[in-house]
Image 1 (tube, one colour):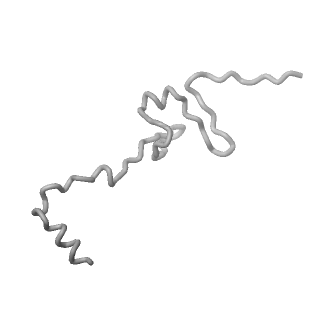
Image 2: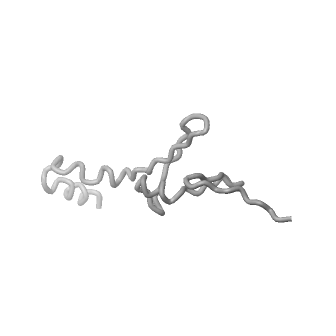
Image 3: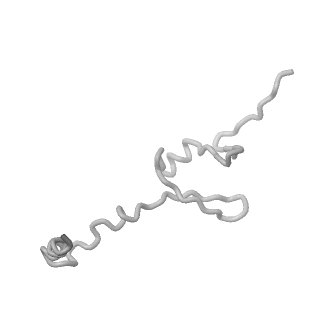
Length: 82
């Protein structure tokens, strides 16, 4: 007897026994996500899960305090620590 496989529809996925799901490529492209991106997962009500790119806190704040300290001040502090 030949087994019949259920037809998959474009844009849909299924949760595996290991609680894994494959995200369709077109959805990733439209969201601007790539392989290796880190995502936060949030439950958004019954039957809804939201994936959001996790922001790198260091990258977000790097360079924000330029001009706060006078020239050479931080270098002086670093010399004190040695």
